[in-house]
Length: 227
Image (cartoon, rainbow, N blue to C red):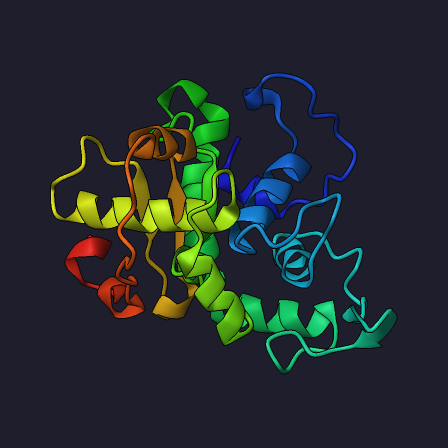
């Protein structure tokens, strides 16, 4: 199963068998979810998910016009402040962001072809560096997320994961449970992590009131974190 299959146009092959028999479509969905930083899935496709799915070979929605609900009504909007349709975003991402696909594809191929060699077994957490830093659309929402210590909340999860990464980076964590995936430019940096292990580590522990943010500049090409 070669990596080029990710760009195929197989929308119908069943994928209910073991991972080595997974279809092109399943790999595309998986990659689109990761590349869109989990903002969208096949059942609830967000704008970036639709664009990445197009980049990966599915052009069925190429003329889709981006819309969002505002005060109960659907209105057009520009993705990334400049793209009106999937086609526009797809063309731009293919031109400027294919490096992200090329870096991710070998990991996806390896996991589907040899699941027993998966270097991150049980890792279910994923998001962007912005998620990890609790960066929200408003200052109020950002402050609320960073202060969140309530059990079983997304804010607590991001704060625990960010705190664990600092411990890990300083060599003070029992195991490496956070992997930051460098990107160029660094603003597209994403993260995967072992959510259950991190939650277990902090069980019974109190998080500090202030947890330092993780600067994107730490993940520039050639830095020690990107080798």
